[in-house]
Structures are given as structure tokens and as C-alpha cells.
Amino acid sequence: MSEHAHSSLAREAGEGQGEGHRRPSFVHLAYWFLFAQGGVIAAVLIPAHVLVQGILGPLKIVPVVDQHYDTWINILGNPIVKLYLLVLIAFPFFHFAHRLRYLLVDLGVPAAKSVPAQVIFYGGAVAVTLFTIWLLLTTAPISLG
Amino acid sequence: MGLAWWTRSSHYFWYTVREFTALPMALWLLWFLVEIQRAQGGAKGYYPHSSTGFVIFSVIVLLFSLYHSVTFLSLAGVILHFRVLDRPIPSRLIVMSQFGAWLVASAVIAFVLVYFGR
Image (tube, rainbow over all chains, first blue to last red; front, side):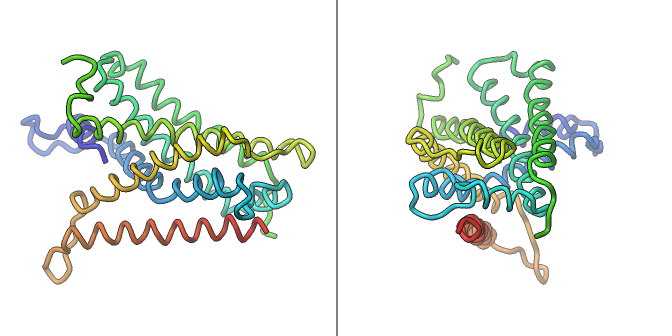
């Protein structure tokens, strides 16, 4: 993960401020968890999806589940697949939000540190999460078959 | 420090590329959401991403996502610390286990995507 992000989170959590061992808030712990897990999930899961669904499937090198409606709607109805897709999509967006906000800061956009910017970036991750939940619940009826 | 500071050293450049990897991956996942949403239209309304432009975009995203994976998982040896029988596990072993998990997960994902696509 980004040392920058790590140090900023540690700073926000009150470390190294000469205040003894102040406990980080629950919000910081929750966000740290989302950021770290989002990075791991993006690292471990995304390349295979991009390779198979983004390259091999469209080029017809191998049959891929999303290339035909019947196979795609069948697998989208599986509750385990729905949960997996929520994890695959939602967690990384919290990681992306933090990285992109600090990338803007590093590139000389101080406004990216502001509260409105935080609302936009992290609120965007929350919005993507809520939209994904809605989409997965309304796209295919839940079926174990 | 000017706006182009990240072009002045390869270390800064690759650090910036690493942070930038989030953007193409986010765009690809949004595209993925569109594909899920298209299934709401029924068999007649569904068409998968298959254009040449999408394949080129995916190749670019794959390169960025691989860079994210390699850099992120390599840091595991620095971040994670385990002790077994009061002896620390070497960081190299931790990093290898992370890459092993990545390999296994990728193989399982590819298998499921292809197997259920037949």
C-alpha cells in the first residue's frame, strides 16, 4: 500500500503527536480496513477478470460467462456470485478513492485535501457500493439452481 | 516544487504510476457494472462488451492492474509480521505466499468464468 496513505492515516489516527497512545477512532479503523482490503482485493482478483472478460472473451479465444445472456443471467442469480461481485467492486473503490485523492494532492492540487473533496471521493465510493447492491439485487432473481 | 516533479526521477515516476493505477481499474469496474446492468434488458437487449476499443482498453488496464498487484503484494513482507515458535517468518516467505494466493485466485476465477461460459 502507499506509504503516503499509511503515514497520513497514522497521522490522522493521532500517532506521533506526542499525546501518548491515543486510540484511533472507529471511523479511522473502519476506513483503514476498507482501504487495505480494497488494495488486496484489487491486487488479487482484478487482473484475472480483466484478462478473461476484457480480452480473451471478446476475442473469442475462450468461452466466457458474460458473452451470452443465458449464461450471464444464470450466474448473476447465484447469491454467492452476487456477494462476490459486491466485494470485487465495492472494496477496491474505497482504495481507489484514497489513492486518487492523494495523487491529486501530490500533483499540486491542494483542494483535494479539503472536506468537500473528501466527500466527493469517499462519497463516490459509498455511492458505487450502494449502486452495486441495488444493481445486483434487481438484475437477476436470487437462485441457487 | 513544480507540477512536473514526478518526471524528474524514475522513482518518483513509478510511484506516481502506482498511485495512478487506481483510475484505469476504477473505469474498468464501472464498465463491468454497465455489463451487469445490460442483463436487466433481457436476452434481446443484452450485448456484451466486445469491441476492438474495449479490448485495447482492457489490455491497458491489465498492464496497470498487474503493476498494482506486483507493487502491492510485494509490500506485504514489510507490513505483515508473523512469528512461529517465537521466530519471525522471513518477509520473503510472506511475499511468496501473497503471490501464491494471487496465482491460485486467478486460476480459480479464470476457471469459473470459462467453465460457466460453456
